Image (cartoon, rainbow, N blue to C red; front, side, top):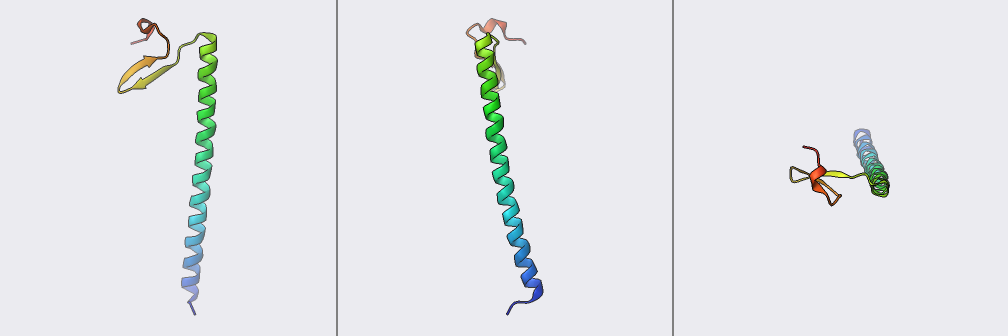
Length: 72
């Protein structure tokens, strides 16, 4: 038979694991939602002729062909 303290400790561990798992799933869902919104905004910018800018290896790059218009 386990003590009351051991029972509470096991319950706390179980609740902590459940909270972490739920939080992790929530974070994944938020990441998917944000990534989808970014992709939609990028597509709309391309459709409207607005360049998308990115930072890659410390350099600012654009998805437009004319790189001379990239701001410094």
